[in-house]
Image (cartoon, rainbow, N blue to C red; front, side):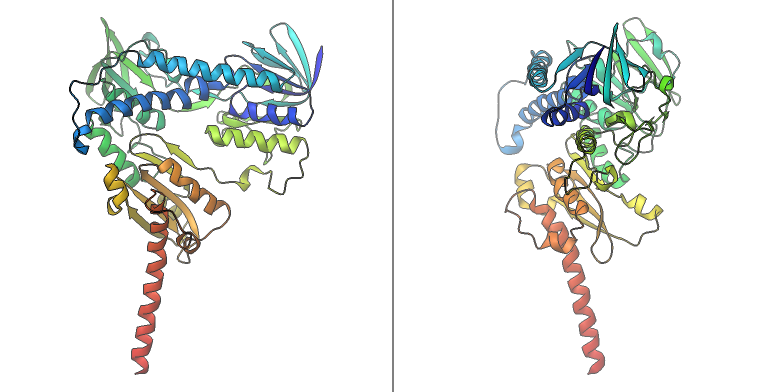
Length: 469
């Protein structure tokens, strides 16, 4: 039996972070990956979805050149877009795999790991022993129990990017990030798209006023959105699929299931060694340790934050905790805010509390909104839909920020930094931002709050002088 200092099960963002740090610390490392290095993010998630979004964006820009006084004869045609995307992902994947082979002692690929005891795993017919074990197996699509679903050849993120052609019509079950991103991309690439969403608005994790900007854009682009409803049944009819819901029926070529995620932990043999878990993920402490302290669970499989950047961060924190790092930064997961972005057009990004959550917590707060349409730079770019929405205390402590608009995924980082290090709105307002960068919108939003406070103070002073007079 081969022995290692560290065994990492799963080579997605979390697992790769651990392997790199453990190797740098001089530890022997074994990694196990049942599919491809890079995990779902690289191979059938974040990266391929952004590739298809980029292709769709370029096609959409070409078709709207008249907004910039330009004209191009003919239409943008889809030739080999999906094949080119697959080639790009394959190239990136090979580069990642080559790098990982340099940083670990051994990689077991195409192998399913299961626990034999608290220090031993089995992969195929081989046993491996590790002093520390990291579970980084990620998550998988949650498939709803709907009549007839098992009878149709439905799509998930796992096989969506293997399509050879854009379907003529696509029904998407879900209203979250994947549903909205892929819905817009496939609509722009020529498909007739419908979204069936059980929540009362798309992107239910954010406030409705933020989501409504994207909702309107998607509808204007020709996407049918049915909120607050669920599918009753799927039926195959010749070469089509019939979708029944709320006394309505849609007929389509393909169905994409984008109804959430669940931890991919069923085959690990956790019960055999007594690791505690729920349907939401493996139970972990602040350092991402399971109830068996030399076994960590990081990334999507612990259910804390289902984002690739959060998985990388957890992997880094947990690896540093394992090697007893003397970093001045906290190694506790709760010590860090987790921003997220949705890469639709317009983009959506958020960090901290929503307005709804602030109300539920009975926190006294103010809402500050800075609209894109009031800034010349985005008007010139033709990207004037959206706003920055700040939830803050009356004194200017930032509680949360939502952004819907161009470059939201870039703008949100400043607010994540502000929340992380208790930077106030006044301090953001007094930080010089380059003009006419899009990031100036952040400063303008903060200045709107600061000037509001200033005007209130001036009003009180005038009232005081009047009373004295």
